[in-house]
Image (tube, rainbow, N blue to C red; front, side, top):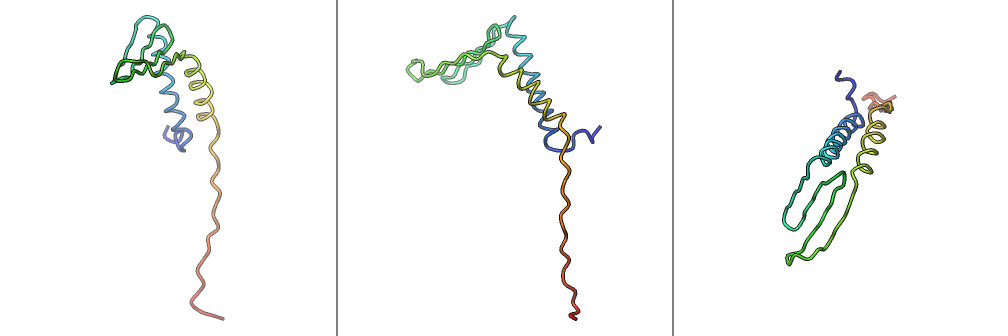
Length: 107
């Protein structure tokens, strides 16, 4: 089993797949629950398959507002990137030419 995860691409493929699964779970959860995270002036809400990002200044004025659906993030991340990283065959390492030191005896 360990030989399947040799190489950086395979490990990154697994990490990408896990992140995609977490986002997909958040996507499904957003249809039944409303999640909200607030830190300082930043607010992130997840409602009905859409992520709302708001950033307020100290006076409470809106500086940045973004609306991002889950699907353009989850589908490419899970299917395209992780499939590429997991299924592509690892590259064969090129052998380096070794240069041997000159012998002590001179001709």
